[in-house]
Image 1: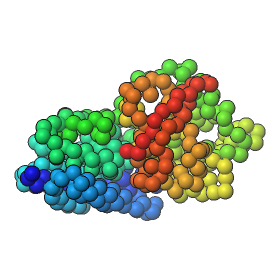
Image 2: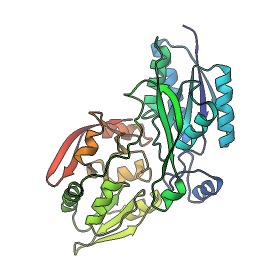
Image 3: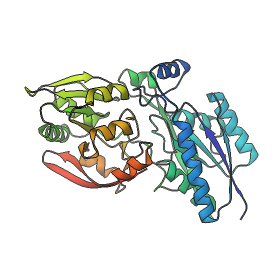
Image 4: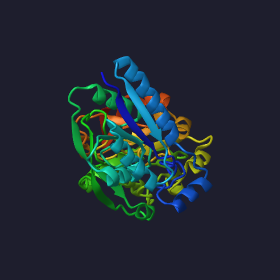
Length: 359
């Protein structure tokens, strides 16, 4: 078998804004702000984990691979690297980044070579990413070692980060890329979804609130489903951020920190009973690791795995078409510990049991 050539582009700043509560790292000013808030690079570790898994799986499967890695410092460098890899005749172009990196790759090479994203951004709404680092390695080796090497055209989308920071969602389609046809390991395009019935959300929110006790610190994740829980608590949560809410002795809810970063969350839950309330991303099923990186492995362990409350309307679960819920926290041990079956609150007095897996 001929040696399969992989070109790997690593965006070194991708995902740095996640744990510090920013909505991405597009632009030098946002990057500067992220660094000032204590953000650390995450993409290099994601790249390293993928490469290690790639080499191990390729050796075990008898698929000889050659991996050429570059770490361009800016968007122009990403585009130039993508063109260079395409012109060099790589079999598969992989990149570590988020939707912004996917946009740069799409603008540079379009549908001229097979591409697979390794998720390391904050948002990752596009349908060109593997569900995690190991899934990226498995998908790549399986595709490269296969006879057909079938691809599927998948959308590249991105949101306006400035609008998101103001609480407004604005999504735009930038083009399509050819991605290995592996629906089990390549995430779906994030679905905007239809607006759920108000009574569905009201019942779901009432059920969650009925389970909260005075003195509990509630970490309320992003999204419209969790926003209904916040509104039931008579607070107005951040649509695309994590809010820290304390249940007072008199039954009122008090916002301790809005749109909180990891450090603020850790300070708020120290020596306190706390819970995490999150909802899977529409059409993708990610419970953790997409748009809520403030809920880091350190935060999750401090709260406790048994204190994770997952909420979703029946319609949102139906969008998954039987696929499992996913976690991609960046901590393989934690993701493994969370795998299994979980109860999902779907309404007033109703639950579903769903499979949850590591991305």
